[in-house]
Image: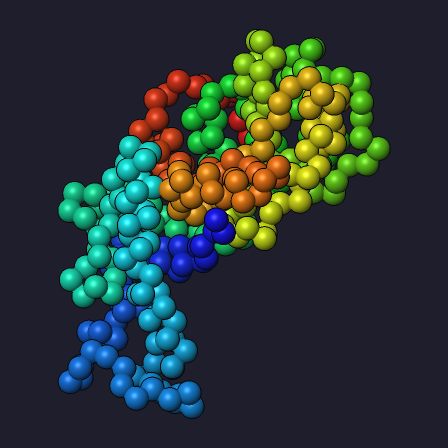
Length: 298
């Protein structure tokens, strides 16, 4: 079954930010003075359709509000599956979100993630590290976030990889060194988590994108996992262990949607950690993992 268009998720999440900020929302025209709260006789050439709003703005708002109920249903399911309560509800106007009583603090955390979707650095760097720590907390193991930009961006790829290997056990590394090092210093990886370090378990290969979900926008690094891992570990890691691709996205997905996305990509399927997983790791997950103090972020 083909995936539905999920672009509405990004659109409606903006209403979470508006609900927390308590400013005038994009639905403010419903409160404006006038005999009725609806758009009448809107023509394509209208420049001031309603109370000074251009037609395009009104139509865009109409699309967002149309998707509001199904987004709330999706969010409630996604949060419940992770042991959380979605902290927003549709308000009395049916055109905006309101914070549920007693959940203001958690609603602010949810809105903070929604606020930075598609923002560049430093927000993207912060999301990358935050999502990595959440992944590590959820799955355990020994992890290092190696992606660019990092805390010391002037290190360069060679120095970064050498430092990473200095933390590996002898049986986890080989003698291979890449012929070239990428200018941004990550050689194609944002992070690794070694699961079952003492018994040679699988390795999670981590990539991060501070964006919503787009089936066509798939990080090309996932097609080069064997060679990228060899750069970092110095040997063909995939020859002796399973390498699990994990993609962090700043979106809201239910578990069944994740499974459909995985199946849609077939052999190129990846596991997704999203904004709800991050919130779950930070608010309800047991603290069963201690991050390596020296290398949680490289």
